[in-house]
Image (cartoon, rainbow, N blue to C red; front, side, top):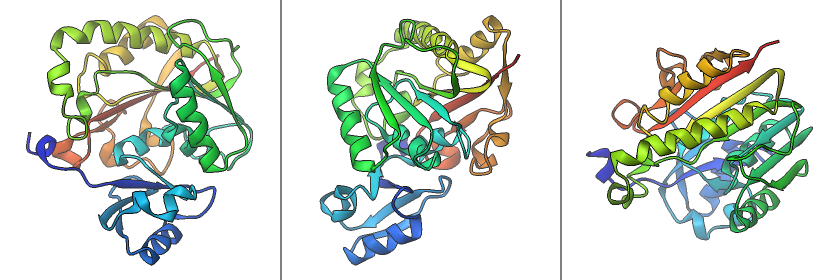
Length: 275
């Protein structure tokens, strides 16, 4: 409760297609913006003083505003996600552009969302990042996607209750009730199943939410595994050395908690498609 009623500091993620974190910190210092490294995400800078939103770094695409817990989700794709990557619920583009940087602007990254306005946000984010290998497809993950089993990595950052982000979106506490959770979980389970159909044998599937609730997190992951015998769980610690062990729980899931990490409550599970 203390965490959710404390104003959050602005957090940036460096665009590694253009520069590294230390170089960005130097550029920001030249604009009288004081930052410090994040505690967990390797590309995070937390703003201590100054106004980066009106500065040149963001407008030049050198960085984006993205919470540190959200940045950790992209790490579950691995240090080199593969030649063909699909981001299924991509807008506004924070994770898409992080994946693009991890892929070093090579291969193919397909980013999808369902609403036209959100596709516009996604297009602007990709353009600002400078990534050239991203292709945008307007598609609804609630239905069957227009792709075959051809992707090395598929990310499902699912629509959820958002209860893990009360500090930044406080009106959620009046908009959400416990009765909302079963319907949300049913939709998330269906979306995860549709995304799974596009993962190649040996490929990775990542499921994430910004929720603190087990109905949307562990329960969805367990149901998915129970109904998809060709997928097995992957411990998040084995995915990439950039994933800190301190944010991985006993089940191998990414799990950030306000009282444990000083971060919003995010969840991430990783699966691999077997032969």
